[in-house]
Length: 76
Image (cartoon, rainbow, N blue to C red):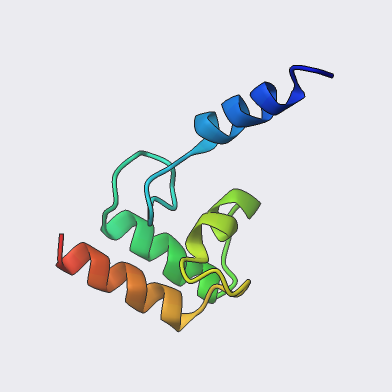
């Protein structure tokens, strides 16, 4: 149990993805935007994609998240 904080930190770092990287390929692209759009339409997606797609952290994947990601992609 004394190593539990270290284990938790390692798991957090291993699962880290850049902001907006919904599909987990370490790149932010139109593919991520398509996945966010599919989530808003309740089409097939994973729980992890849904978690990553909530870019504003309000617990809902919606048009606001799409706009955030669209703006990010256009300005990078």
